[in-house]
Length: 260
Image 1 (cartoon, rainbow, N blue to C red):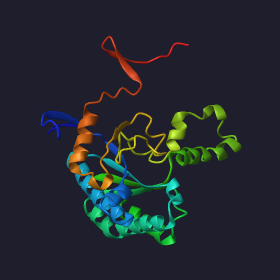
Image 2: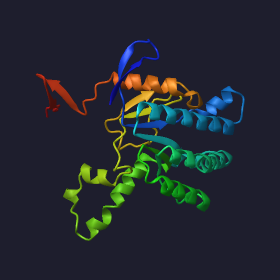
Image 3: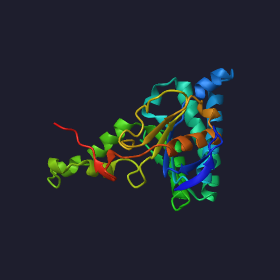
């Protein structure tokens, strides 16, 4: 999808190419809190407000899928009070926001392991998915207790019983077969990954799915990431040429080859 819009920086009209799927690594809540002289929990609450702004921007521009990295597998290693505050914030978000998402026709899904969460939080997640399952206007995915390495491992584990009973041979295991068992295999792959907070890495997020995603890094801390910054990311994405491992040659697209 392409629409004309004003560049937030130059004011020039640019042809925005709208990604179908945007994934965001929301980083910088704690640094924002320190910068403002408040507790880390306040920074995380400010981050929820940023989520609302990005959701509005996605609806404005017609983004079909938004995936948010809310809680990684490694986050369990953070101080206990911070982990409790993060999970309490997630519970509060689900209790307060899901009905509004449902009213707007947005489907909510979760990606990652769940067994380490409390029974109450697991039930909230299940109820949220069930309530919004039939919605079609857009999809929001929240990655919780998620890691890209775990995702690949769990996909491979699903193939082991077939190998044991002989219905699948080792030579039949292809990237396409593994892809079928990776999280969100039924959704478009992420076109654009945005990371806030200044670090230029993907931190074990959607390693398989990001094979040909465009990456956008910004120094803006997540609570300060609003609709103007989202528009800058879209403008930057629109200037890129996505070739998926191919290149132009004599007016046609051919696959690049590496000589032995």
